[in-house]
Structures are given as C-alpha cells and as structure tokens.
Image 1 (cartoon, rainbow, N blue to C red):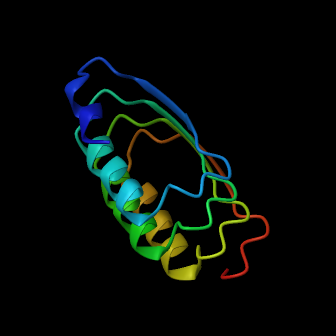
Image 2: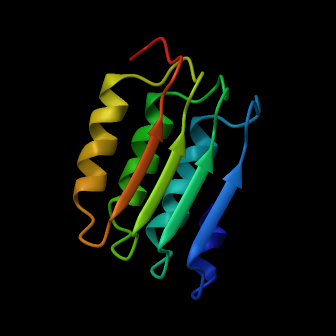
Length: 116
C-alpha cells in the first residue's frame, strides 16, 4: 500500500481481491496510507467482494486515505458480501468522499452486507 506513493505518475488503480480471506484491516489500512500520498490518482477501483476479514477499522483507514486524494475523479468500491462492513464505516466513507473537490463518479456495492 505505501509503495503507491512512490509512483508519482500513477493515475489509475484497479485491485481485485474478490473472496480473498488474507485481506484484513491491516492490509486495507496500508492501502489507505498509500492512497493518501498518491497525489496524481484520478481513478480507483477496488474489488473486495467476499473478503470476510475486512472490518470497520480497515474501512475507516481506507476512508482517511481517500479523503486526501484531491485529484480523484472516479471511485468504484465493491464491498458486497463483506460481513463486517456496516453503517459507521459507510458514514465515514461518505464523509471522506465528500471532501474530494474533483470527484465526479462513485459506484458503491454493499449488496449482502449483513451489518448495514
């Protein structure tokens, strides 16, 4: 995650972790820190459907990173079937995305998240 900041010309990120049991809060937190310093990032697509170990803490850390990505214009996040994603994290996500002046498009999938 933190290596993203070492790619100064990086403008688009697509990561597919569908049903990856190895991704948890610490991984999502590291990704959020990397996104926070990827200053040219304009497009982000994270496929995290079915990642059972993602929780509120990881999503909150991701939101903190996203809230500083001032050039971000498009965000696609798939948290479907993530059992621990709930209201607190989604509220934080909404707040973080609301801080982005360039944001034009958001796609959020939280289908089958029992915590919502």
